[in-house]
Length: 153
Image (cartoon, rainbow, N blue to C red):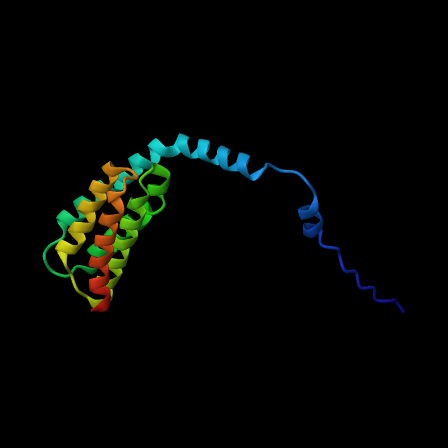
C-alpha cells in the first residue's frame, strides 16, 4: 500500500515583499511623469478628435429622443475619460464624467434634452483651452448641477 503525502508549498510572495530592491517611490513617480509628458501631445489630439466626433454626432441627431444617438455619444465621451489628466486638463475628465452621467439619466428616463448635452459639449471645448486654471472647477460644478437636475427626474 502507498502512503499519501500532503505537501504545502511555502508562499514566495511574502518572502519577495520583504526583500529590498526596486525604485524608490520618488524616483518611480518622477519617471512616470516623464513618460506621461511624452504621450501628452497624443492624448490632447485624441481628446480633440473625440470632441469633434461628439459635436458631429450631436449635430446629426434630431430633436426627438434617439436612444442609439445617446448611446453613441456616451461611447465617445467615455473613451476620453482619463485623457484629461494626462493632457494637463483634468477638468475635462470631470466634464466627461458629468456628460456620461447626464446621458445615463436621459436614457433611463427615455428623455432628450439637446441643450443640456450641448452645454456639456461646449464646456468640453472651453475646458480644453483652459488648462488647469481655477475657473475650470466652476465650469465643472455647473455641469454637475445640470446632470443632477436630470438625475432627480
